[in-house]
Image (cartoon, rainbow, N blue to C red; front, side):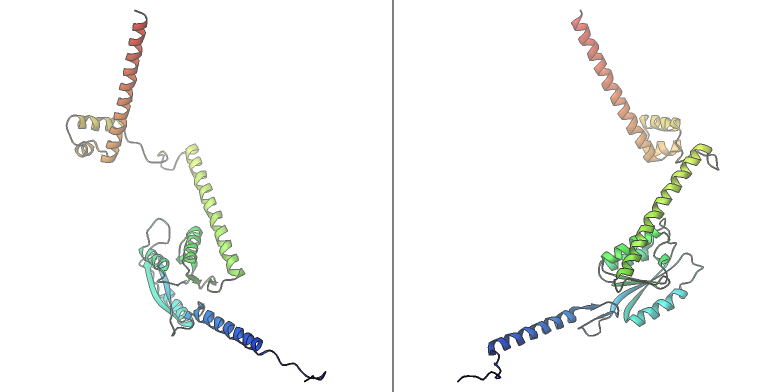
Length: 274
């Protein structure tokens, strides 16, 4: 039966089914991706029953006379607004690199182990007093997959973007500048002390022990005393005395070897010219 010019052609049944099937598969794939997506900003795992993001709230003061209460309230409000599961890490210690910070170290270990997925502070100087320490901490947390939020500076790595990348890069660059300036200041101070002397008049560096004391202590050891007893008698450390005796023995062995070589050389000369 011939069709008229205005008659519409029906699409093939197989093609229609294939097209609908692809759309359904694509929709299911997107649903799976969404269900696996981690909504870090809200602190919820989408597709799971309200799993809250484990977060570390780090509170630090430098001395026992200070209080962390001014830091506690804003951090708890932040955790509640984000829907986080907060854990308080409270520490009373200076943020300089000279002292250990056991609570801070435990927090970093928890972040590396995945027990902490977010770290919040009231200010970046709570993480460290020097910019280099702060940058190093941010890099470690970023590598561990933990986000960092600092209330005072407005730093929030929850939603990565060009601004956050620029800020982190700027902090890293400033950290390198600070490190270089510290090296230059240290070098300038050493050169000034060598040229004009120190305020106390003492030489730079660890004072050298009197060689005579070490020699006497070594003679006591040769006379039968133990290294510990000889060091205590002479007023030197046991390790220093052991190092001194080791160096002296090496010098004696080298002198004896050189003497044997000289004697052998002289004997060969006599044999050649009897």
